[in-house]
Image 1 (cartoon, rainbow, N blue to C red):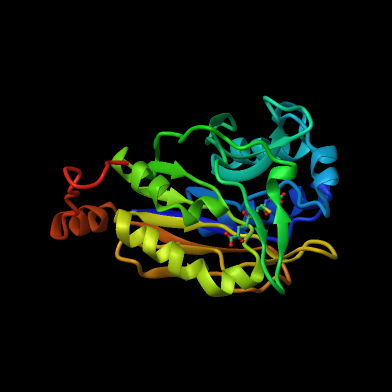
Image 2 (cartoon, rainbow, N blue to C red):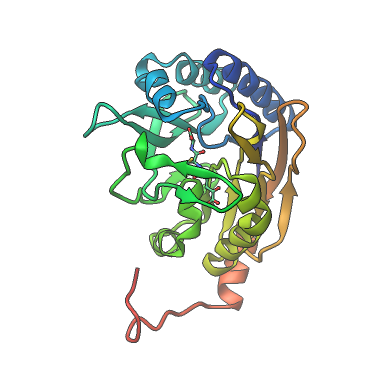
Amino acid sequence: MALVAVGQLTSTASMAHNLRQCQVLVTKAVRAGARVLFLPEAADYIAASSEETVALVKPASESEFVLGLREEARRFSLAIHVGVHEPGLLDARKVRNTVLWIDESGDIAQRYQKIHLFDVDIKGGPVLKESNSVEPGSQILPPFDTSLGKVASAICFDLRFPEISIALRRQGADIITFPSAFTVPTGKAHWETLLRARAIETQSYVIAAAQVGKHNEKRVSYGHSMIVDPWGVVLADLGDQNTEPEIATAEIDHELLSRIRREVPLARRTDIYPEV
Ligand SMILES: O=C(O)CNC(=O)[C@H](CS)NC(=O)CCC(=O)C(=O)O
């Protein structure tokens, strides 16, 4: 068994402020005895416009936010999974929406770049065009070995595309993570259902750290950071509290993973539909 923590915060456009909030989450995770801390999408900053998103970006090697978290990871031998922005690779006027696995030595060991971008225009709800400022990723990151087992990363809106989760499971994932910043209306309608569906259909743990509360005059996030077990049981839910950065923890149980996969084998009929 291994204890993991999800951390919930309200990132603003100030990287220094957001780093301090994440340092509080690190302290709480270490006190709780967690082996890994999962932080939300865009933990480094949430800006009020596409222009500001692009203006604030720094390479990980120069980002006070990333360097600060790497230092925390090393100091406490705590692995940290965190969503950040990085400069575009193909288009310098855009950023990448990435998640980093910072290992117990403080090194960036894995990186995934969000492949599905959130371009929506919901009547009476949010209008967001992520592709204005973000360059989409073009590959799935194969699940990687950690002290928790095989971890797989996807980001926020990727949650709505079951193919990526099914592919990650086929590639060996035990835990699928969705660092997120869900909007309030879509969160209310879909968040828990989607997370539980991904956990049930992949028979894997789903860990989803989420942004919460008001980031600026235009953006509010739903919160409800969750840990779901491979049977679909919600082990932790941080709700919409945002008075201070908060964590929730749960145990990763490999016996439960093997038992569920053994008891209910999901043998796919790839002779009838394509394998993903
Ligand atoms: O803007 C940033 O800097 C960080 N990125 C985000 O917050 C992204 C793009 S706007 N949010 C989502 O994908 C929400 C998805 C969602 O709410 C849903 O699928 O319903």
